[in-house]
Image (cartoon, rainbow, N blue to C red; front, side, top):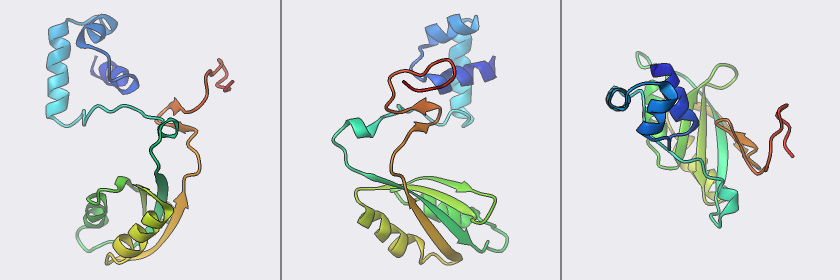
Length: 159
């Protein structure tokens, strides 16, 4: 039941405990208990809405920054990742395989603000060897949600 519950919430966090109870054929009090457990143990980290910000008047820039670094003795990449993810403009940090070690997703009001973050906050961190910044020009799909298309047919084609 736990995996099914998590998948349902991942697809639609607005489902009520009553709806989840019916969908999973499980008593409401068991659903509530399981949700409390999953929140307490950190499996459920939060509930968020997916927003298509291009349909609002909010102006911002998203950038993905590849970071190459030398790991710290006895700490690997963790300490550097922690330093990076504590900046408020940082939305995500991933340890990667391949040419770069970390991938950092940030948001800023302008490209200049993102450039400032890279030059003044990220690049000076000890152990960072190099960075490569990629600006997101348009978001088509994120976390399984397609942006800006009214319909998707059975083959996954947008109309």
